[in-house]
Image (cartoon, rainbow, N blue to C red; front, side, top):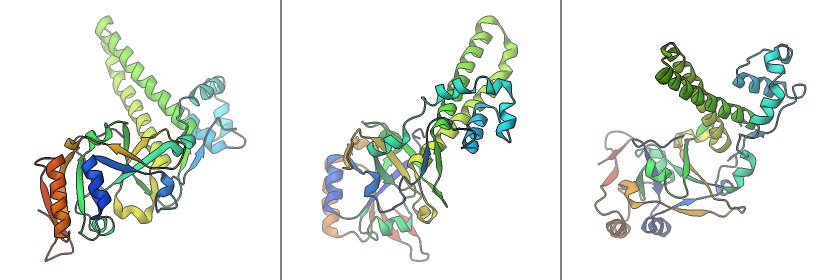
Length: 304
């Protein structure tokens, strides 16, 4: 997904030396998927290439539908000459538009964030029971740091999803076609006076938006799905393509102005808080600091 300047990323840390070092150096720890404690990380089914309609009819029908040829059966689909006469060349072209999702997984590094600064379970599990702290980041500045990252909201599902690279390639082509059609139609309206074509633009815009939504969903299914038991985290995930072939983590730098607030847990040891404040004064200047405290009347946290 594209970064949203109004959204924030919440990074919870315990009161550790490592957390202070990363803050002082302006880096975020990004891991290979195999290092996380969820054994189902990246546990999706990836399909590549052109499906044989006799062996994989569901994939074949799904690809045709994205192209604009919905059908109830392969026989019905192949009876449509507009489809059958062009299908082989078009599918062959589109399969090259999709990223190699399976191969990309080895080089991707992940940083995990929360989406709520007052999430009690996040403070309990990742903020060491209000002894740690939470860095509030500007989403855009984090996503656009070097190397550029891709942000997505994790999907929580009951079963592993399917990732079809051909469907992605067709969606990519449909988005390109829609944008090209909009540009050509706009040119015809402006320079040829064909105002009657203006009514076609919303159709192309809708088709392009649907293709983009489909591509985003496929990215989530490839790199950002977890079992529904993890849904309390409401995780937001930063993906960085490292180019590495091993499973070692990377430290990705960010500009200190990306930190918009620091929330300190009320149970943080005094000495650690003193050291944290020294690091903040060196790196972030006058960034606002708030405290997460337990409410006296409900099982909720108050951020003041």
